[in-house]
Length: 117
Image (cartoon, rainbow, N blue to C red; front, side, top):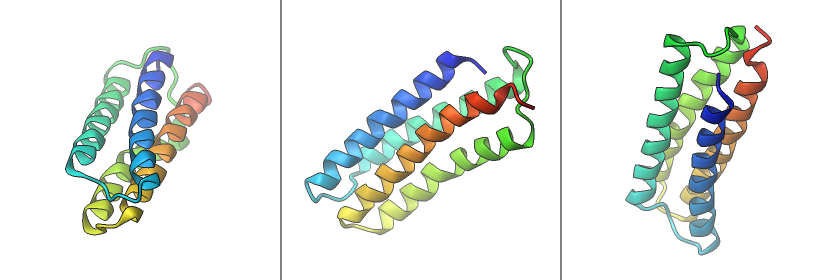
């Protein structure tokens, strides 16, 4: 797992979290463009997971803990998007904010556990 892959993933999550935080602070619900942004982040995470499966960069594997983190981060944004789509209040922005922050944190954890497997 490359540090660059993690930095890009974390930066994408930070941008999405900032956008959701701005909407939450302004007492606004999630808009469709934010869900498109979450889809872009999700597509990146899927591509990152495929890249790690197809071509492990440094021979690490991370073991079961790595793959549990990877599956969790892949599931969080779609679940948050469904929740945000159903909840049409300010709290939808808070849900997307929390999900983006957690996925960003999981990106860093993935890098930390990569060589431990």
